[in-house]
Length: 457
Ligand SMILES: [Cu+2]
Image (tube, rainbow, N blue to C red):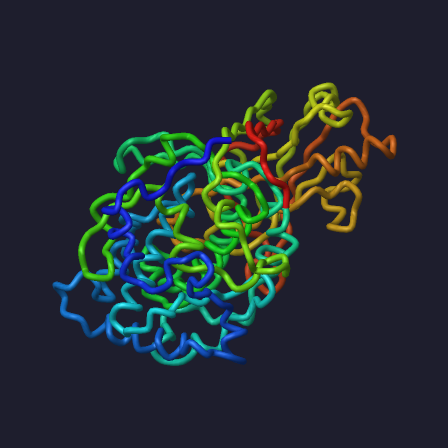
């Protein structure tokens, strides 16, 4: 394993703003805490500081790039994304840098160097925290919601990604592009879709657009997203040592605490946790103390696809029309009997439905069209929600390996593997027979290779 040297020059440390804080040592970084815990105890005056910070940024002159609207526009507008990265391997790194500088600006304008952006722990608390109903944390554009559906963003949904050691499956695929015009979505990781996307769209209003940072819940949502990456690293999973990723520079748009435009590379962003902030508790509930090295460890990470079979192309998935396709059992057999590999069923280019929310239940060799989540043929779910028209198509995958193994062990896997995706309406979502185009349904085998001596959590 190669450990990169971070912060090569003093210049970049200044750019990060860490020299001007008293909290640069790993052990006394300000803690990003859950909103729920802050309701009980808030010794560093986080909520009061955040409130004052938002009000101050809103009152700064238009030509100050720390001004609230300018901060929002760095990400995007109601009509489009501007600098933010989504659907590729830069997603979490870009948002980490963006949140960090915003946090630094709030420290600067309030004078509270202990401030750290709190997070909304939607894994355990699907209700929008009460704080966001009060000024200046509220946003009138939101869709009224009772609660998130934890079959989409709950703990059980996110844990498989937290325990997946492969960066490309958990965090996102390579962005094979050099400029914004040739924007290529190379694949959301499991943290981004469906959980992250779903929270945005379910909260609705600004949150469902490029203007999402205008809703203060954005910052608490993305503090949570960053915490997922932090914990994923803390569990010993390495980031890739690919220079195309590490050397990628977010250039000419981020703004530091002094209002200066700054550049930051992905590699520099890796060091921000434990250098400028940390998280109070792990998602898994374990001790919060984290070896700072786990955040910057890299290794050669690869994801091979020895098998890829298209099950259907330009198909339509709806409550009244399912998707299906078959492959010969011999295609997957080696991976059920010892050979390393996960069998995924991936739906690519799902256009989010226009008329209603629904689930796509994925089954292997089911006896009936939609036998339900309790069936031994059930493998997982695609989640389809109403998205604004500009929202890019989604890729989602379901890991069918455990289901295939279970059926094989029970002698219930014949000579063919039949994959069936059955539409099922979401309770209370209005329209009961929505449907939507899917670019491609495929079955593939992914093999993860990580070259290095990775410490296991
Ligand atoms: Cu987001």
